Amino acid sequence: MKQKAKILIFGGNTEGKKAAWLLDAIGESYIYSTKTNSNHTVMGKQVNGAMNSEDIVRFCTDYEIKLVIDAAHPFATELHQNILLATESMSIETIRFERIFTDLSQNKNVRLFHSFEELSKVVCESQFNNILALTGTQTIDKLKVVWQQKHCVFRILPTQLSLDIALRSGIDQDKVIQGSPEKDVASFCKLMLHTKAELVLTKESGESGFFNEKLEAAKELGVPVWVVSKPSFQGYTYTVDSQETLQSLIYQLRKSILKEGTELKHGYTTGSCVTAAAKGAFLTLFDEWPPQKVTIQIPKGEIVEFVTYCTKISPTVAVCSVIKNAGDDPDITHGEEVGCRISLQSEAGIKIKGGKGIGEVTLPGLAVPVGEAAINPVPRQMLTNILSYLKGEYEYDGGVLAEPFVTRGEELAEKTFNPRIGVIGGISILGTTGRVEPYSNEAFIASIKKQIQVAKALNCTSIVLTSGLRSENKMKTLLPEQPQQAYIHFGNLVGDTLELCEQEGIEKVYIGLMIGKAIKLAEGHLNTHSKKVQFNADFASKLACKAEYSELIIEQIKEFKLANAITGIIPLTNDEPFYKEVIALCKKHCATRFKKEIQFYLLP
Image 1 (cartoon, rainbow, N blue to C red):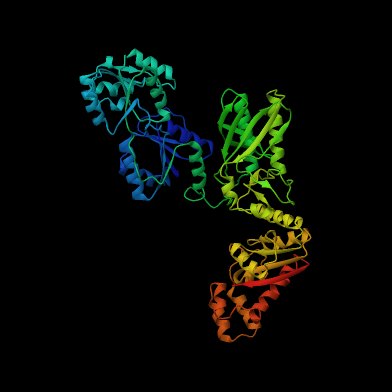
Image 2 (cartoon, rainbow, N blue to C red):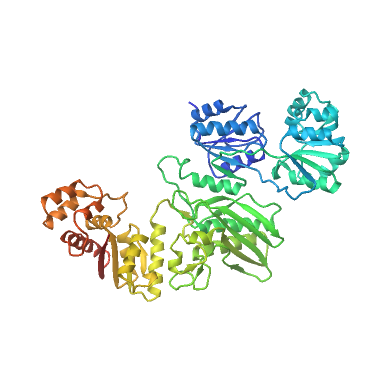
């Protein structure tokens, strides 16, 4: 029985190692495929050997692959073509994990070529004789006409395999220099001087191929660089060029093609994410190297690890971000970049200030005073605790300014209730336990409670409850005198919302309901979610019988699959006996949760 896996990575180079490391760090299983035996240490199952498109189809079928990550070298043209051909035939989603490439359009020292054939022809026709080729072992045969006519030296990797490939092409061994590429301009300068290079040949290999260092060294020595442009392929489902973006995408795909089983997974709050980012930024300032991962203890007591992306801006300022994992909860910030900027201060103490994408509190009634950043008390305490601990560990007596941020916070906030409760300009940093429980009602109920508290602080004695925006807009035409903050969405949690109104001392509640939710509520279901309760045609038909409708109408209702169909045979008006029965029962059941006045409206 072959091991099952959902992700297949084609690697063997820097991007392959980065993709594998990331999936290891976030606990995602995968298979790692390379053309030759790889010395990469990865946790996923490793396979090697070249694959054509038919091989890839068979492999993906055998291992039930749902996602292919093509992290192979940009010039692995045949492999890219085979991957796209195979995955398209199987309707498998693909991610091209690409390198970051330099814009060469303004570089006067660089000349671009579309192919090795074009490059070879122009080199042979040129006046250059001493040539250094940094194009890789696999290109020696492609540039055969060049080293047969010119003095061309190739720098190749210091492995026996690379040397064997080079010598099989027929090139003299004295035209081959073995050495590992270093991310060091000085080492490239030394190599160019050693070979007396008049011209450098290379491929558009991107940042991880030390392309910029090659260009900088050649510029210093006044040596022109002729470059074969990277091939371009269309057809990938997604293309990313950073680990951050890849991590965000994997988190999103966990909710669809990578979802396993029926068990729901928890995630972590924005407060936990900000705390981890603050630790990462602090360590970036005080340790020799920025951390790739950090651990924190959340209020629930659990030790949690986060992948971090850290940058040292100056000796006293660092920025770190994490990608939020909200698990299976439908959290608006799932897969988003959440971070913290840490600045060392001369004045002692720890200060917390809202950064980009963090909202500002503008109305009373929340746990944070008006004028402050919308960072709730528990996340503030988490930040203070972690920074106090780190200051002690590193014997730092100065001050620290922490500025949490959410990169797309302002945009995301428009999709939340924040504007209604007076949090403007971004989202709130929330969390009490540090964890997000999947599909729990806790966060939604907490949001409703905040809205009621804000309405009360603004002297609203009555609240207008609706299930969503559509019914809210209808209620606004009926109750135009009510302020915006009085309108609150209960979703499906009618009973819980009424209890909160009771607890907060609200005097009167208006409830606007579509007929579907109204009939569910009339039957006694104070949570009207379709996962909890479906339209009960028998119950509705009994209401019609009690209201003395004809046998024909009663029998028709028994056959209906949707409550909305009732309005087609019984007009929706306040005086209609059927709907009077519905409202009477709704009031009866709601009175168990809210003791004061409730007024119902059935909405078309």
